[in-house]
Amino acid sequence: MDLSLNSPLYLLAAQLGSALRQRGWKASAAESCTGGGLSFAFTSVPGSSDWFEYGFVTYSNKAKTVQLGVRETTLKSEGAVSEATVQEMVTGALRESGAEVAVAISGIAGPDGGTANKPVGTVWFAWQEKGGQPVTARHVYKGNREAVREQAIISALQGLLALVG
Image (tube, rainbow, N blue to C red; front, side, top):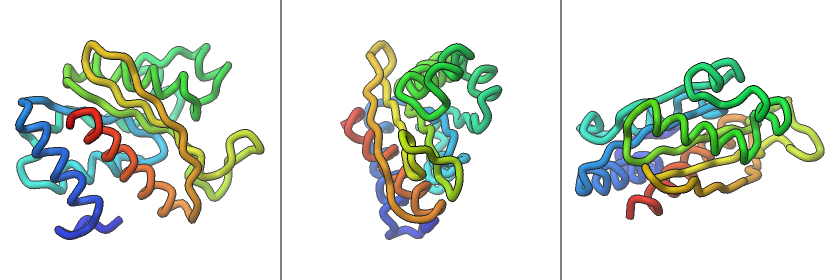
């Protein structure tokens, strides 16, 4: 993952940090398939402690349940990679962190784990502002594991920027 000063990831994270700082807001992230990569992108920006509150790496179903309050019934009926799960993840991230805005990411980065309904590269997102409703999106990315994860991080940043303005 390229986080040099001119990389798209770094520039998006810096832009987000500037927008959050202007509002006096903090952001949190609930990550599964990105394994902390979004939090790493946030903290690559100097001064990110002003606007980055919490990073939850909830790779397992147990972590999603314990740290974010995702219901076991949701995980059993919908699966970890689903709209319902990321909605519960983002709501839990906001509740547990006290941040003003959060994003949740859950997907199948590969190379294994895909199915006909959820192929490798499927990633669900949810973004939510405190007091608002989650906004969700599903993407199916192409490429290897690293490419899927990097594309997911870029999409997460873009979604947060759209929410924060």
